[in-house]
Every structure is written in C-alpha cells, then in structure tokens.
Image (cartoon, rainbow, N blue to C red):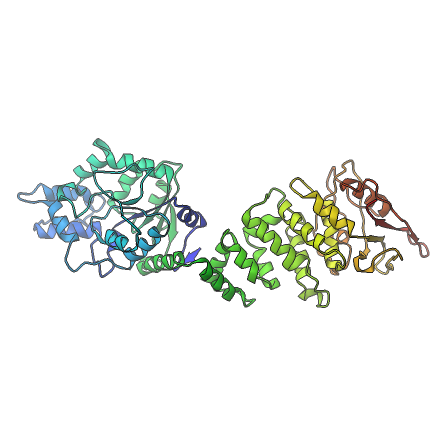
Length: 544
C-alpha cells in the first residue's frame, strides 16, 4: 500500500494488524528537528571535538568502524566516552519529532513491540502518550525473551541509565554480541518469530554488521531506505522499501500517513471507499493503492463491494489478484473470496440490463471478464451464481440464463449441488443448434418465454471423458447467444465438448445425466430443416 510515497507491502501491514510486527528504529528517526540528534558518525565527531582529538571519524580508516574509533577515544586520559554520549543525546532543547509521534501511534495501534538502538528517550516519551496502560521498558543488558515480549527495548542501552551500560565502543559491542551475547540471543529469537521493519537505518550504520549475527535465513525483515540497491540489504536478506535518495522527509510522510491510516475506524473506511468509488474514473496512485489493499482485506472488502457498482470497477478489479482468484479452480472459500464472488454474481453477472446497449451492460462486462480470465469458475463464484439463479424463479433474462449452462458444465468439488438442482427445477431450457447465422429460433408452446434459452450455435467433438469443461478464447458479441458458441470448439484431451457432427440433443442428454437428480429427465425433440441445411434438434430439459 502506498503511504506517503513509500510502498508498504501487504505482508508488513498484515503482520502489523495480526500483532506480529516489530518496529526496529535507528538514529535516523531522531535527526529531524526538534530532536536534532546526530547520526552515529556525527556523534563520534562531536565526542572527538569535546576531547580535542585530531582524529576524524569520516576518514577512510575510520568511517566503517566507528565503534573502534570510539574505543580509541575512550583510551585517552580522563576521557569517558559513555558519559559524553549520554550528555549529547540528552540536550535540554531536544524533543520528540514527527517520526517518534507517528511510530508511537503505529506501534500502539495493535501491540506495542518496538526495539531501538538509540540512546535517547524520545520514542519512550511518545509511546507514553499513545500507549494504553503501563508500558514495559527493557534496558540493556536486561533483555526480555526475544520471542515473547511487548513494550520498548533499548538494545544498546538508555540515556536514563548508568552511562557505563551504553553500547558505544567495540568492546561494548563485542560483549553484547559475542562474549556475553545477550543482544545476539535476544535478536536470534526475535527474528525467528516476528516480521521486522527497520526504520532510520542506513547501510553504513555500525550496528548493521552486528545485526547480521542474529538474522536467520527464515526471518522476514524489511527496511525503509533511500539506498535500496546497496549490497548489504541483500547480504542480510532484508527487503528494501525505497524512497528518493536524500529525501528523508518522505520517510516522515510515510510514517505520518501510516499512523493516520491506523487511526481509521470501520466507519471511516466505509466513508472513504464510498467517496473513492462514487466516480468511475482512474484513481490517484495513493487512492488506487488504498483500493487495492481494501480489495484483499476481510474488514473492508464488503465496503468495496457495496459501492463499486459501475462496470469500470469490475474491469479494474479483474486486474487484481484477490479478484482473479475467482477464476482459478484451486481457490476455495474464504471471507474475501466469498464477498467478491457474491459481488460479481449479484452486481454484474446476473443483473437484468437488457434495455441497455451491449457495451454498456454490466452483465456483458461480467461475461467478458469471465472469458478473459480463462472461462473457468472457482467453487465460491459457482455457488454465488447458483444462489443468484435460484433466486430468479420466474423470469430470467437471457444474459443470466447462459450462466446456468456454465454451472452445468463446471460443477466440481466444493460446489453446492442443491443450488443447481433447484435452479433447474424452475427452468425450461429450449436449445436450438443453428448452423448458420440466419437460423431461426426454435420455440415450443410448452416453453416459458421468460426462460427461453436463445439460439445456440455449437460445435464439438466427443472424447472418452464424461466431464464437460469450457475454455473461452473469445467473447460472444451478442449476450443472447448460447454461451457455448462463445466458447468455441476448443477441446482438451479426455474431455467432452460439443460438435456439429452429432445431435445437440444427445450432448445435452449426456450433460443432464451428469447433473444430480436429472437421470430421469425427459427430452422433447423437434427437427428444423430448411433446404439442404443439417438437421437442427431442440432439447427441452425438465426434472422428471
């Protein structure tokens, strides 16, 4: 989902909503005003300046080992690097910034689970405002269990504690990650269980070379960064979520938009979806991202289906994965799938809009979407169409009747047979195999005109299987045509398809035997001949 210019994957948002996300913050979150705190490089430079050292942490020899640089400074006479660091990060004028506030709101929405390598107290201050109840705070080296914790963890120590506990020099890092290894043990368990999002880190952060010690190959981790192509992310198996280089305000915008999104209730989501779907036009990128996310969310998909009644939105949804699953036989029932299947059936496929021009009909759009998706129904959409047809007991438009033929052909495991049985009880199908475009419609005095199935042009070939399936490479230009004419004569090995070389009656007899309850169906035939045209057989199917 696009939030403030950064694409946040559904996997991250889902982990957040399911209370399985750890937000892992670095120095970058505390640089923006009014915090104004330094990165680790600038922190080292400030310490060097305070002890009047001629060493430059930005020099080639030091820039990739700032922890060692701090250790060298700490060896000077009367130098206490830890106390100097504590003083710098607790400057009286430094206050929490927008990053801290947004991160606290995001974390407190579901389950406050935050780890920071910063020493400052700004995130703790912000969490105290937004977190409900008592906030558990863990300060190094006293770590919780990495796979069972809630609250805020100061992985490298807190400025509120004795400065000697701050992890600053390479000796401190060695103790935390190698000798005592309390940080490494915590991280190993945490990465094994949770999805982790890094915020405020760059590839050059000294902590990155130590974090790699706790990153197992099976863990899911992401980083919001302006340097997504850096090799360190691949080495650490971290998925980079990019924003423009040097545009750190985009990171802030992302976090603020995410916090606002998290603050929306169901009524807010319903109101926003109603506004976005009220016009059938291409949405802005952030709006489209929100719609795509809503399409796959159990709590919001019903609002999408409530307001997306224009055929534009059906064609828009047809390009998105949650909806495309409706036309995959492997798709089973589920909250999102069932909602979308009912939407497709009742708002489009089975609507009576015959009075409109063909290209304006929602029913025609539904047929086209079905055809372009491969002409195969999953069980959830099969059932939704069956329920819809069952509800049309007395007058079914031709555009709805054609779906009955598809249901008979594509019954499968997971389909409710009773829907088809009851729907057919109220149907008298009149089928005519016409072999030229001018063939007349065959009618019968016993046929209900409201349920008369239209002229049918079919071709097929028999094979050994008793299963009928369809594939639709083209869309019928006239919705009133037999759906099998749109299917064409494409057949697959071991399957039954319809052929001009045999009577349509016999094909439909075989079809009827497949449908439970129709073994005793009776068939009335009439032959329509004109000149030298082949025999045309009408079949009327009724339950016995």
